[in-house]
Each structure stands twice: as C-alpha cells, then as structure tokens.
Image (cartoon, rainbow, N blue to C red; front, side):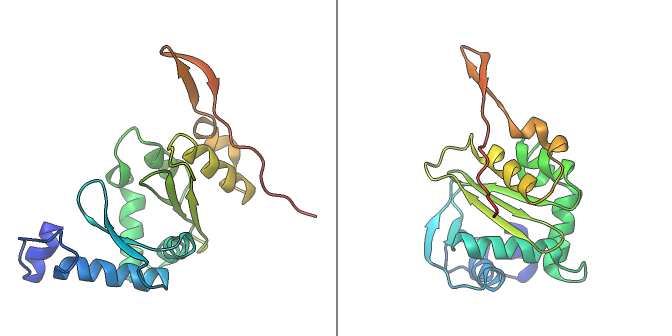
Length: 182
C-alpha cells in the first residue's frame, strides 16, 4: 500500500485512513467490482479500512476477477494470485493449497469464517460460516466445489481436516451434503 502511495505521489502518512486517496481508490475499485455501494466501513485485523459488501457482491467481484482478460487490471491481479498463491495467504495455508490444487481457481479467506472463490468461467462463490469459526470454512468450500463438478479426489486432504484432542486425531470435520435437485 505504501508503494502505491509513493508511485501515485500520495502521502504515505495516514494511508490507513478511509479518506486517504489510496483507500478512496480501493473503495471505488471494490464498489465497481461488486456492483454495489459500500454497506459499512470498519477496520480489519491488520488496521486496514474494510469496505463491507454483501456476500452476493463479493462473489460477483471474485467471478469477475477470475474471468478477466489479462489485459485488464483485474486479470493482472488474478494472474498474480494464481502465479504466487503463497503471497495471497502464506505457505502452509489451506487457501494456498486449494489454489495450487485447482487450476485457475482464485481464493481468499477473510475474517470470521469468510471464503471467497473465483472460477475461470466467471463463477464467484462467497461462503460465510455464521458463527465465525474458521475450521468449517474449507470443508464447506470443498463441498461447494464438488457440487459444482470439481474433482473431489484432488481436494480430499482439504475436505476433512482432523480434529485433535490432546494433540492426537480424535475425529474429522466434514461438510454435509446440502444441495438437492428434483
């Protein structure tokens, strides 16, 4: 963020304030991608302004990014996320693992059980675990991807993480089948 300020000739001082030119650009970009106005402004865990949108809007944004042409800014961001998934979430994280496992998939987890997914075909997915617990996030994500036709076998290690008791596996966490058809 500081580098973006320097490149654009904006002051680095105060770049975390929602009124700073950097944050105005972030807000405007997110508003354009989601197709909706900001619902609320808050602060995320690292002190950055958080411009809240609906789950539907966030899914739309990830679908747009995932399908964007490489000549567009969104496509360049998607390419960078795919090429360097460890920069999205870090080594050893499930988000990094799922992006490495599923070709073309974009993924980002968020605060309190949020998961955003974008597929190359333009489908966006936003999942929110209601109680905010993170441990159900990836099993539910994998279940949704399986229901959309992705190969569950390649996602098996992410689908059922172990539940530990006293440092030893005592069970597994699984998402139930939740889609039905006539």
